[in-house]
Length: 137
Image (cartoon, rainbow, N blue to C red; front, side, top):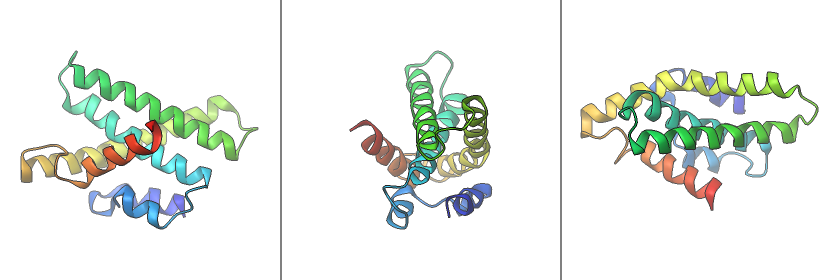
């Protein structure tokens, strides 16, 4: 199920807000947490790499959050696959996150064109709030 949902991110229209995603998945499953962490990481990677000015405080915060959520995804995968090669696992997770950046960036561009904001007033903002609440509380 997670892999099917991940593949759905190929087009921006296929993104499901995390709140909706969490209503249809097992909250105790490590792959659910991995998926959510990768989504959270991708949002912050897109912001850090494409939206925030170089050396800005927002960029530094998004870079830190990207790393935090990427590590959370890695740790979630290790729960399910404790004997996995850690280097290979990290590469796979980072590649999964990177694959989400272009479609996420398209959503952000579309949102900015419609509302004047990259994420405020959209499901992306809701996702960011969900990420913060789920992982940092």
